[in-house]
Amino acid sequence: MSIYGHCVCLCVCPLRGVPKAWTWAHFGQGSGPIFLDRLQCTGNELSLEECPHNNWQQHNCDHMEDAGVSCNPYTDGVVRLVGSDSPWEGRLEVYHSGDWGTVCDDNWTEHHAQVVCRQLGFRGRAEVASDGLYGEGTGLILLDEVQCKGSEGTLLSCGHAEWGRHDCSHSEDVGVRCERGGETNEVPGLPQITGPLVRLVAGESRKEGRVEVFLNGQWGSVCDDGWNDINAAVVCRQLGFM
Image 1 (cartoon, rainbow, N blue to C red):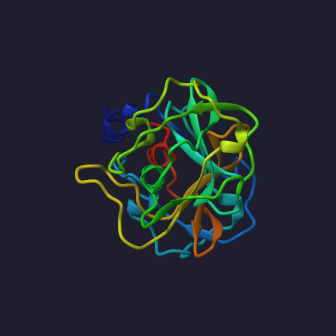
Image 2 (spheres, helix red, strand yellow; image 1 turned 60 degrees about the vertical axis):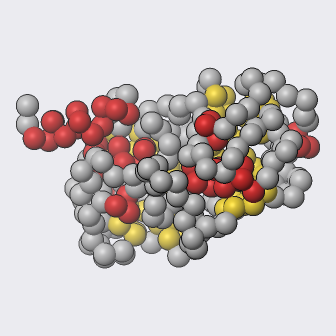
């Protein structure tokens, strides 16, 4: 086995399949800045920020070389914030058994919000948003009576009622607001996802698309120089596909 193949097996197989790297703007060309070039991930990183790369915005690329990724399906307990233009705030949704659904706000406190923000990779303060700030969901209500101490690494680690069991309506969908920067919310011994946010856009599903990084208030693309499946695996890990 080659050194490359050995690394793929050690670093990517735990993701239950090898995420695929796409080159030459497979998911279309971006229109904003190009933030990253010549990423050289080993496969053990928790975020693209941890991978060796050129200085931010130092590249010799155009958008014909925008990198893309196809990830594995979401796993139970992955969370996201929707209903806002900002990636650090929104209505909380959680993934379970193939569906996204909302979370009821019964007994929610900053301790709960802190766990959500930590799971999403944010550092700093976390707070529960006022009712209805990010609109009402339209699908399932998946969690109620969530009981977090504030030290948990993921929402799934908190106690909660049986999946789908609740006494709520969508008017009680909880919203969360995270803060970038400031003091860390890290838990000793828990791997922390750091660095700028990433997203996948223009794919046929949420698990694939053009890779974009959020930096200094705007989204930008990644150049495909040296782009490979190991880099793709880091993106998928940062997005919660584990």
